[in-house]
Length: 152
Image (cartoon, rainbow, N blue to C red; front, side, top):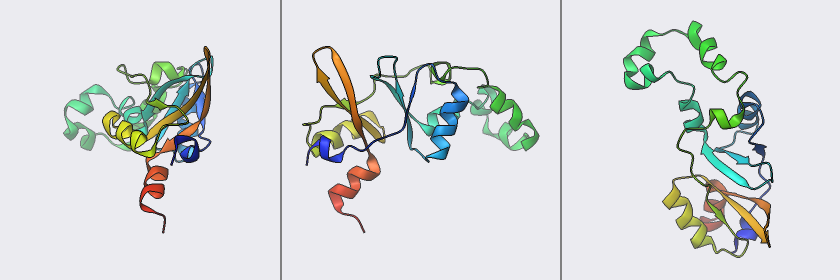
């Protein structure tokens, strides 16, 4: 089973899209992670939804979770205001790594190992033609598991 057989179209955003639009894409499609492409349409980042949510939480709440219990929902507007007007690159966690990518001929075990090593639920499948890179699609952890252990 090759990556080209496992890859599916996956919604993506460009680095210059608004953070609010990126959040909407993530929620509307119930995506496990955000696939961000650079201006040349190459994978730039793959960031899990939980890491993007973490960017919305004030640092003082992350340091002391008891503060979150003391803050009521009236303050939620402050959280969403945090990304208003930002490009998606400003919303990404500060330590965003090169996204895990494989070529179309990568085997399922290679994809599985890469996903496990990088702790990501998503691997981009790319095809190279000289200096050009084309996104073939992406493989989600759910899709990979379905193919490895069989669907219901």
